[in-house]
Image (cartoon, rainbow, N blue to C red; front, side):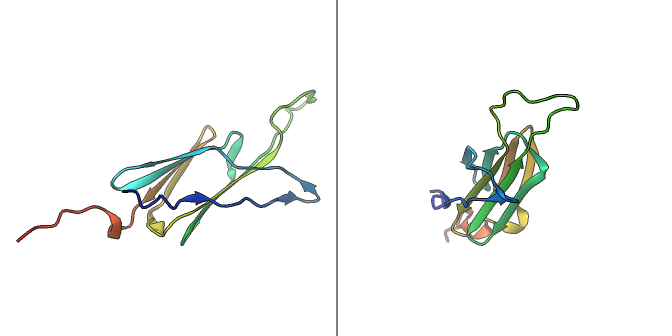
Length: 129
């Protein structure tokens, strides 16, 4: 049974950059489980490592990333379907994650986060006397 069933999204906040409000977008994501860890994959197209922030604390994991767009030198944008945006995903959990061993990697707009389980909840065999 997964102890991460209580991992649920919390409501995003309206963010502003200066005086201009930018849309807050909840990224698509998925969670997988192994006996050792949970794997969180979030899709953040256009987000770079420099504009990405991942925080983990007791009961909360938060991903924030900013997608920007700059026209190449000499170009003028006539039409764009991907506006600048702030991605935000906050997930609450029931403190079954070993915060000191979290590992994250961003590649091609896909963030992969390994959330190791605490030793207390890992399955183990008990010797019967």
